[in-house]
Image 1 (cartoon, helix red, strand yellow):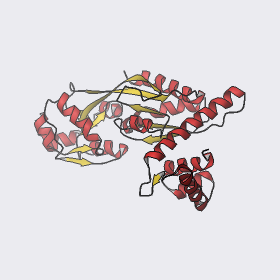
Image 2 (tube, rainbow, N blue to C red; image 1 turned 30 degrees about the vertical axis):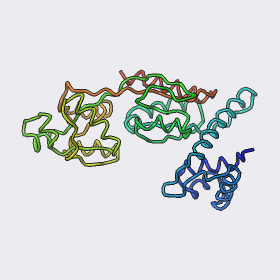
Image 3 (tube, rainbow, N blue to C red; image 1 turned 90 degrees about the horizontal axis):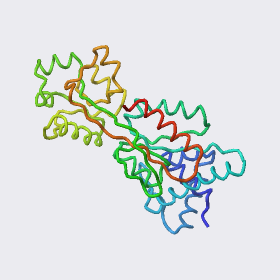
Image 4 (cartoon, helix red, strand yellow; image 1 turned 60 degrees about the vertical axis):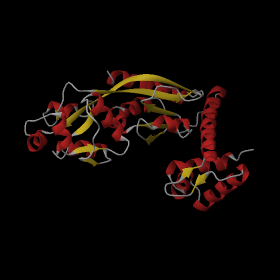
Length: 294
């Protein structure tokens, strides 16, 4: 029989990325947590994590993470059905950076008005979030892929729209009134990280009808800093139209190709295990997305 106390220790250590922080979250000593995880590995017959930086689960560990996630949801559902007070257990979700920077705070506001459950967000690219859900590390996610994971459901939320923006100062300095795709791509651009290459590639191919090129791009993995770099005239940047509506209105940023807009479909995925809190979070996501993703 599984040692669920040890399994929860393993879950928290992976969640917080280390034994020290995981132990703090559990209000235990680091030594106690380490011993529990060692006993867990002995009981299941193999290592559950690779002790590197960052820590990562082994294939066996991933199966155990998925299992404890499901157990937590089942416990909450049982408490509700039996009339016991729900434990307000955390709900873990994977959400991409652009959604976090634009409308997910409204989801949090709507959800927190009904539920006390903490929401633990894993920040990952929309091309990666579904895999994180499939691995059992989270209970729900926002993804650009619509196919549900095994044992889950999905619903289309709408379309996130992107345009290529630059400041008037950047246009004057680098483009010299020649705002052509070829000239723009020779000027300094911006990528968030290695996963952002896919988004820019799609824009270049679908909107500008040109071969992908990133030779002039800086990498700057900060949502606030990403916009600030464009505002300061350092780079052009592919940004969600929702994120910079005010800056465009005030003339601080200009759409370089106003009729060239990339649409990225977004889907909400969630596990089908019965959970009132997850149902309320799903409802909040749908309501806010309906208003924002037109």
